[in-house]
Amino acid sequence: MILPAGENEYISSSELAELVGLNPTRIRKDLSYFGDFGVRGVGYRVESLVEKIRSILKLSGGQKVAVVGAGRLGTAISAYPGFVIYGFEIAAVFDSSKSRVGKKIGTLVIEDSSKLVSSICKKGIKIGIIAVPAKAAQETADKLVEAGVKGIMNLSPCYLNLPGRVKVLRNDIAMELGALPYYM
Amino acid sequence: MILPAGENEYISSSELAELVGLNPTRIRKDLSYFGDFGVRGVGYRVESLVEKIRSILKLSGGQKVAVVGAGRLGTAISAYPGFVIYGFEIAAVFDSSKSRVGKKIGTLVIEDSSKLVSSICKKGIKIGIIAVPAKAAQETADKLVEAGVKGIMNLSPCYLNLPGRVKVLRNDIAMELGALPYYM
DNA sequence: GTCTGTGAACGCATTCACAGCA
DNA sequence: TGCTGTGAATGCGTTCACAGAC
Image 1 (cartoon, rainbow over the protein chains, first blue to last red):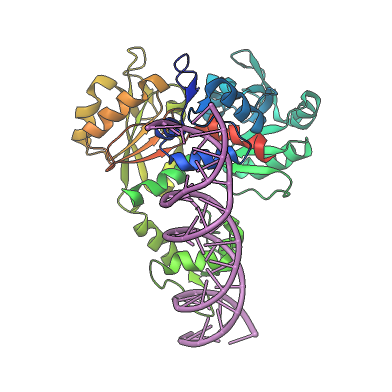
Image 2 (image 1 turned 30 degrees about the vertical axis):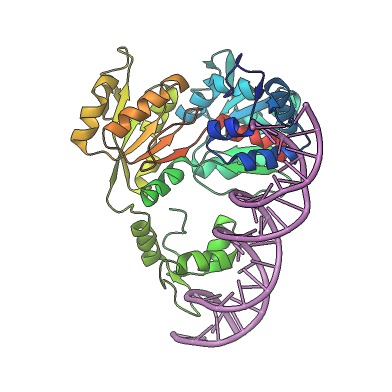
């Protein structure tokens, strides 16, 4: 991924820090929290480090993801090749509009939102991405939870009310952008 | 925006906290940091609160934004109506591909990336959104800075090396999603 | 000498507890 | 009585400083 492939076998905490714009100490502390990955006087073995992080983040299992909403944003995400690096596979896309259902995004066929719960159950998907208009977001989230989803990334501009057992990440681009002028 | 419009004239810190999933005390501390907005025993006047926050965030001036990259993601963002709530106006979209230049997204015409610096200068744009492939991101960022942009939102999966005076926000959806399985 | 791992020190953000005001 | 504003207490994440391993 970010790590310079095929270069040195080992990478030091300061090189890693430089790469991601952080403090070397913090890199070491964070990594040591999960075990002794490094070799003193040498650094971290790149290959095994990547593998360790993969397993900590539970990214090794080829996690299936469902995208709800096949508007411009949902389509962009469904077609984005960058997820495979993290071990994700977009395994289903849903939309409520009849005009979109049945169309393809790459090899994926857009499914009807009314089949969301059963389809996600059947495929054993545990992660959902919400890319629907704000007013449909809560309802969509409820259905995802009903289908057994354990983690949700919410791209719509609203807060979701969900049971504590499901982890929700919010990613409202417009709101994030809203903070930018303040910092400038 | 999020605030229940047309309902009560005043809103309390606990209602606000409920709305955004935070602690009431934190709401009060944060707001009081910028002045005494509230009325003791009553709450915060919704209308003036919104106005105050707008001015703190410097969102009143109708900030112009440039989007670079008119792929699926760039197009989705350029067409997204949610930015106006925060006082943003997408004032320009750029792409390097001849096949896209000249096409329209809503009322916007996609401009050639080679004209990026001059066009952004001319329009006085101070905020840029990077929605180009990772390998073109740094180069794009450099050009934005050259054009006088002061804040950048980077949607590509890489870290940018830029002078400290420009504020950079990163928003790598795939990476954020990568953290989800860990929390689940 | 180099670079990791880690207890101790530090600083900052959050929370508590309560004073002040409608 | 109800809710804001705020010093004090708390807790947590970051950084420091150095011991340990190669």
